[in-house]
Length: 176
Image (cartoon, rainbow, N blue to C red; front, side):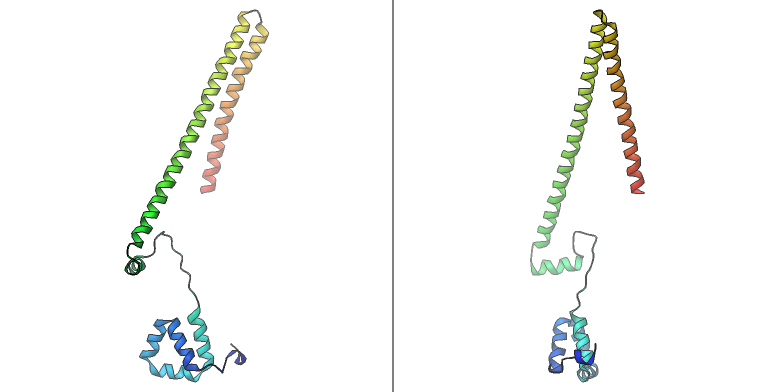
C-alpha cells in the first residue's frame, strides 16, 4: 500500500473500532494487549491493511450436504427445527431421485423387452413366409426371404452384442 492510499482524514480509533466489528477474534486480541492497540493507532497504514484483511472473505468447500455439527447446533439454537427440516428435504430429494432412477431403469427394461418380442415376431413371420413360399412351389423366393430373415436376425444380435461389449469397455477405460 502506498502512502497516498492511506486516508489520513479517517480517525484511527474509528478504523480500529470497525476492525473490531469485522473481526471479533482480532478485537479480543487487541483488548488483551493494549500495547499492540497503541502501536496500531500510531501507524495508519498498518491499520488500513488490517481493515482490508479483516474484510477478506473466506470460502470453505464441503463434501457433505450438511454443515459441520457445531454450525448445525448454532443454527438450531437460532432457528429451532430448521436442521430437521433441512434433513427432511434432503431425504425427500434422495427418495425422489431413487424413484426417478427406478422408473428410468424400468423403461429401459420394457424397451428392450419390446425390441426382443418384435425381433421374435419378425423372425417367425419371415421364416414362416419362407416356408410357406417354399411349400407352394416358390422355392427360390422362399429361400431368399427365409434366409435373409435369419441372416438379418443373426446380424442384429451379433452386432448388438459387439456394440454393447465395445461400450462397456469404453466406460471401463473412462473410469480408470
